[in-house]
Length: 236
Image (tube, rainbow, N blue to C red; front, side, top):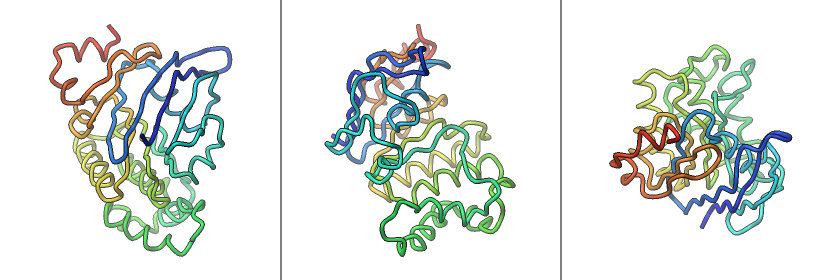
């Protein structure tokens, strides 16, 4: 098992949001985490990556306990995280953002080859390579955020709402890119999404969160075909 999250409790200060969550991701697997607004999906991803503190429980990655490791150590271990909103250094160029994505690589000579690979996956990033990130469209910023993450060639990619703010056409393109990235890098993907049908189309398995607890776990196809899908996603 590549990622194992066991009985995880997390939140913000005195407010606990995640209550005893168990999830896992296997090698070369795409796993979707779905749920209603406020279900705790983004909080769970932040806790796994170490952006917020874990109250109790454990997170194992490739057999190592990384529960309380710093985010930089998790990046070095092969964990990549793209938070909601497609974050980037907006005053820097696209190419500079991609270069910074490889800051943790021990062999910096790998960066140019990996940038070329990312630009082949996302041709728009090649076309806008000298543009400031702040001038990109929402879809281009999402591509840049994912592309910068890929420079480090993570074994597990955590994506939080990659379709957020995108047009329907761009959502389709983003999901095609995510599927291509997983195949190209032989990487696993842990995907948080509001666009349930897109996520379930490419996912192998799915979890549904409701009020910080797992309310469904199983094959993505089973959930997509379930007549209870709408109720699960609304938290009923």
